[in-house]
Image (cartoon, rainbow, N blue to C red):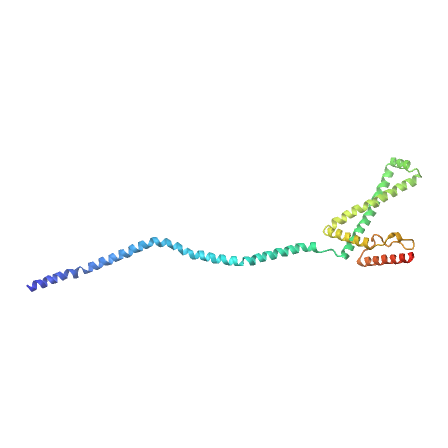
Length: 248
């Protein structure tokens, strides 16, 4: 009876040993399926990689912070450049015309007026002579108005035309001078106003003038420099001293 049991026992053990590889392969396959199912379950969570862009946001914030950090310096640079531009643009306006340059411009204006007066007198004299010689009717009209010798009446008419040209000429000369000195015209006008205020303040009273003590340049027209202005002041004081000595 024991032998059959052993055989049965052997037979009963044999299937377990023979089917063991199949069970192992099935377990391995099941484990692979389990791993693959976990991988598939984990694969939908891959879009969470978009969270990996969060560091980029941090980087943007870090990049924006330096710009905000340097913003005051940039603003300060812009403000300094603007202030420098304002100073450079306002410096010509703030720069005043000195007295020496003013007197030079004043002398040049007087020369322009003188030259224009000469040219104007020549032009009017020539036009008057041409008109009188070309149109005898004008001679008759003038001789009726000026009942003198024809040569005298025509000569007076010619001199009248010359005087008219002398008086009209400075208007053209001043116009040309202003056009050439347009950049410093406003400063020149302001300086000239201050100069005439000084002349009015320091000039003498002409009521004490006489043949022996004439008024020394009452309007200051001969003043052409700073030294000339000082000389003018000395002449005014000398006039006052002389007038005081005469009155006493």
